[in-house]
Image (cartoon, rainbow, N blue to C red):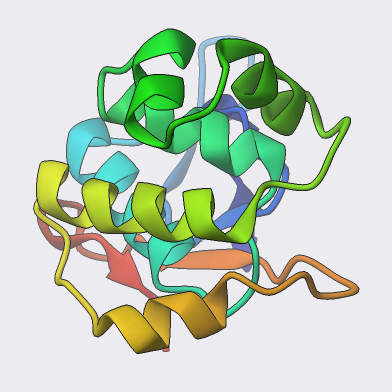
Length: 147
């Protein structure tokens, strides 16, 4: 298997390369994912450093990784909680200014390498397609974005 689609994250666009496949007692293929906390940090890194607007699912992923409620996130970006709910469900596009603040806060909260504010603002632009987040899983203590 070249890459495992990690839908357990709640995201459809996360793939892990280099995972170990083994059989269970019934002969079914199983995948063990050690060090899930580091994996989730690598996924968050992929979201906040990707040069395209994040999806509603990605916003929800970051919010939960940061340990925030919708109301807390809404207060931080000066919006109503209903707006955050609509963004997360994909009913309306995420406001680019709010997205830039979320990215900056995620970088600080989740200890992700920071980027220049102008660069971040340029990333918060809608694209036709959401690119995948590909994680190198060959060294689980050091998950990182695949090159």
